[in-house]
Image (spheres, rainbow, N blue to C red):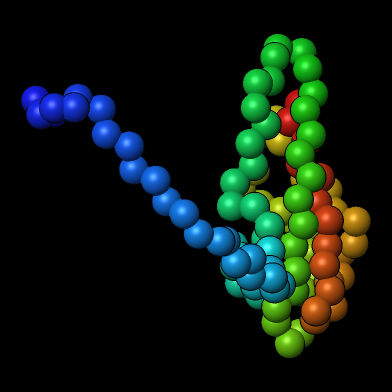
Length: 100
């Protein structure tokens, strides 16, 4: 700005009212009947010859059980494992993605 004073301050005052998170807030990335707690997997810095892992989870929002038979479209250097292959309605599953 070319006005005087050259610096201005803006102050906000108030109270933040927390809203409790529900299941839809936690698992907001919906893919079919599964809601994931992440929208992408970030490995950060991965160095040559190193192995890095990322864990994430999903929730079954559908009324039917979901069976994980295979994961397709992954690059050859990424493997994903889950702690269960059958996810009942209202149940969660944990995944581990390994960058090798």
